[in-house]
Amino acid sequence: MNILPVHDLPNGHLNTCQICGSGELLPIINLGHHAPCDSLLWPRQLNEAESRYPLNLVRCKECGLVQIDYVVPAEELFFPDYPYRSGITSTLVSNLKSTGPTIMNRFSISKGKLAVDIGSNDGTLLSGFQEAGMKVLGVEPTNIAKIANDHGIETMQVFFDEDVARKIVESHGKAAVVTAANMFAHVSKLGSLIRGVESLLVDDGIFVSESHYLMDLIDTVQYDSIYHEHLKYYSVKSIVKLFSYYDFTVVDVDRIPNYGGSIRVYAQKGKGRPVGSAVTELIKEEEKEGLYNDSAYAEFVSSVVKSKRQLLKLIVDALSNGDRVVGIGSPGRAATLLGYCGVDSDMMTYIAEQSSSLKLGLFMPGCHIPIIDESTMLDQQPEYAVLLSWHYWKPIVEKLRQKGLKSKIVLPLPEVRILD
Ligand SMILES: [Zn+2]
Image 1: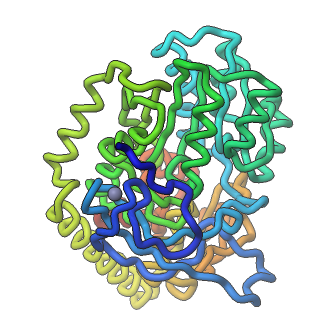
Image 2: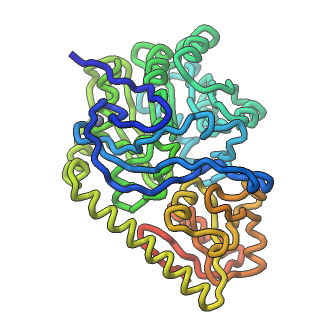
Image 3: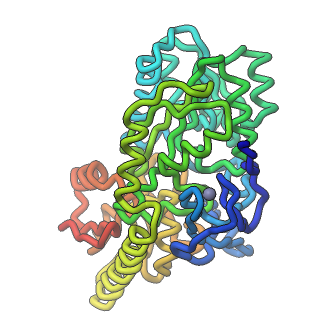
């Protein structure tokens, strides 16, 4: 009998696996205590206390899920003024917009049906469905919902759960497709979310989720994508295990480039659906790579520690020479990297952001480095600029060079590299 473990997690420390409930959690790396990575500070908040929580990465011996062992309350992580907006990162916009038509083609979903996006942000993903002729509805807890509504994407400002699903069925009917792009690994009340999706979908409906992919995280040493919002680091095997507890079959999976390497997982409502070859092939690859034993993680941890030493040496040497060091880009992951490496505003004077960023004038959590308009960096031409959004380095470097940046650009991971 399949006994359902609790997928609605309590806040605070966890001592059992988030998917299978096993108590055998093996340590991978402890990154220390960190402030929530998107809790950027206003200047006045620098005079207040700041909460920090453990970031301890562990692996379940039973089902293989890689996860952190602490749940920060969702209200603290995804507060109403949450500054992340998907629609302004141009590389993401095209990926997000193409998601809708891709799903419609693959599962022959006809126009006029309903698509619901959970964690719909500014509605970029749904606009792809809408342009392809579907009805759309967003569910987004933060004030970014207003931007979506202003752009003609109907959006409810609320956390999605079973109750919200019921209300949507009453007001809009059942959905042919539900998407959850890059939020599926963020949800602490995952049981309620999946049960909600189950009741919201038509009988053969498709639930598409996107999450960081464990294989990419390990291969490219992306320890900086470990932060409190990401409770789980899915492999295909662990996500198949998760859906085995519900009325779903994982029917297909794509590897996609989003956020430095993600998987898009297609779960169809109903058990025993035909499964695409990509599912079994990727699980085989994961096993071959060593994701279910210790070796892959030992190598990962030694690369993490090495990259920290390299980055600190580069910064300390530069500062000793009288050179200036700044940062470029302030994605959530920058807080983990700077916090783990112990880089503060004495070592990195400021972080430069595009002038359209909602983060200008704020300070990074934990290290309190100010975020300012990139025009200052372009005026000052500091000797070194560390690219904190290094997972998108190519287009960013190209753009900054076009704008005239002459600084040496430093990629901090997977190992420190200087682009002259
Ligand atoms: Zn487990």
